[in-house]
Image (tube, one colour):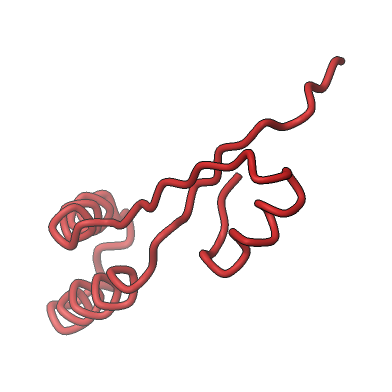
Length: 81
């Protein structure tokens, strides 16, 4: 289960305290490498100019570096199909 940190107490309450959490934060360099690979794979090359590419490589890493995911591990009921 993933979610924002503010829901962790609610999850802990619902699972009677049987919860462990792991915070995951992206690294800026990884984000930039991913964006470079995606931009290199773009099939509409005539649309992208150097200004737009520079904006993408600045804006997206700035926004994403502020995000993180809280992975919540707990004892959940087993589902049988």
